[in-house]
Length: 166
Image (cartoon, rainbow, N blue to C red; front, side):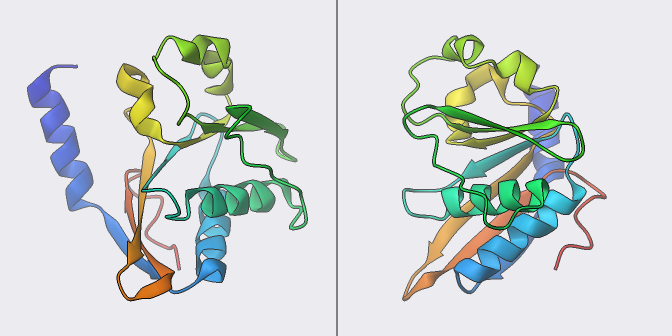
């Protein structure tokens, strides 16, 4: 993608960013459930933030809500790198943790192309390199100084689909 086009897309995304204060883990889980209600096959959800920012908590909430099973065991794919779930809608959701990947070429071994037909949730999307889906929802989580349980969430992308989020 040409630099000018990418810059224009980034400016549009920044202008439409939604910001939410997540007071506790329960609020993070509710955000995950709300996003799960509007996601569909072909979607990519990119989770950004430092260690301990709440990326895995949000990913677990997305998977549990999409599966319809609030008690579903959702392990972190930190060691397996990818975990795939069959959803009642008939699509799949693949949760990636790319922290341990070294190169974008590793995505092929992780089934990236096939997974993109369903829904992908990606922790550490910076590792995607040129494979970042341009139509992805990007969620950046940041701890709130002085409030260890709270997070600030910035959601960018999916124009017209997130306006009704709580």
